[in-house]
Length: 194
Image 1 (cartoon, one colour):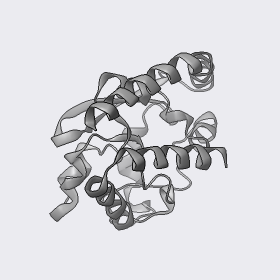
Image 2 (cartoon, rainbow, N blue to C red; image 1 turned 90 degrees about the horizontal axis):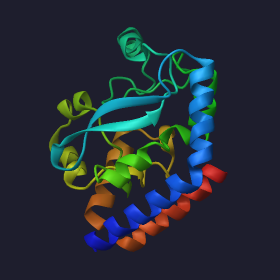
Image 3 (cartoon, rainbow, N blue to C red; image 1 turned 180 degrees about the vertical axis):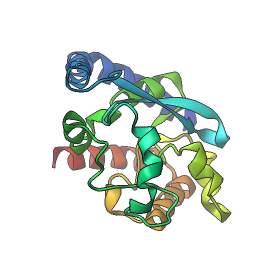
């Protein structure tokens, strides 16, 4: 089953990158022309079994967003949660807001799927500082590769609490099957289109 999952990841990510290449170029140009900084943002994340890797995303925030994050910590919509979320994040650019609305900022992660650091479906790839705050069973999220999409993304996205997100990720880890992956991919398409 793992070999089939990897085969599907390679075939789907490769095909998607080929088909979407013109769109990726247009998005990259839009990001570069509307704000200073690179089109693609690189971030250190922890993957399967805690292995560190670089995740790629279209940059949806201003160039020095990480430095400004410390100033905004007390405004976290999730309180003292492991995750940091702001519904009205002042660091998000105009183009970035649109990219996030349609999840287009995630498209460069298809490269991560191709190189094997991520899968099409799995838990969200955590930041190292988030993992430092994990307690109890939460580390079990990292028994599988992180995914471009996952159960929590199609079950409420950023409307879910940290506890609900963890519960869904652990359900995925404990009940993984190819059928579940295909169901999540189908729901992802529906959520993005809706």
